[in-house]
Image 1: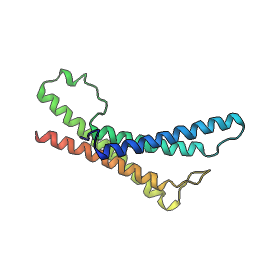
Image 2 (image 1 turned 90 degrees about the vertical axis):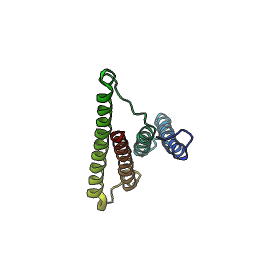
Image 3 (image 1 turned 135 degrees about the horizontal axis):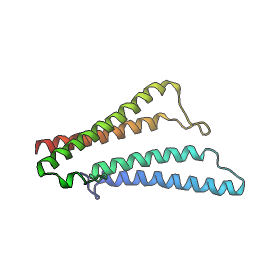
Image 4 (image 1 turned 90 degrees about the horizontal axis):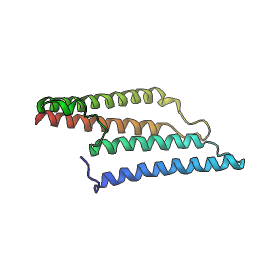
Length: 154
C-alpha cells in the first residue's frame, strides 16, 4: 500500500497530472486552431502519448494504493474462508493479466525495436513509450503477485 503523503505517490500524481494537462492543453489548442483555420498538426500524436502515460500512471497509483474497482456481489455472500480464497485468487489473476500485458508489450517492443518506429507527423519515437508501458505493467503485476502471496501466508 502507498500513502497519499509518500514521495512515490506524489511523484506519480504529478507525472500523471502533467500528462493529462498536456493532453488537455494540446487538444484545446488544436480545437481553437481548427476553428481559426490554423490546424495544429500532430496534436493527436501528442494527445495519444500523453494519455498513454496518464493511463499507465493511473493504473500504477490504483494498484499501489489498493483501490482498484471490484465487485462484491459474490464475495459479500461468501464465508470468511471462501472470501479470503477468492480475494487471493483475484490478486493472482490480476498479476497474471498484467504480466500478460507486459509480455505482449515487450514482444511488440522487441519486434519493432530495430525499425526506428516513430509517429507520422512529428516523428516522436515510440521506444520510450513502449519501455514505459512494459515497466509499468511489470510493476503492477509484481504488486498484485506480492499481495496474492502475502494473503496466502495469512
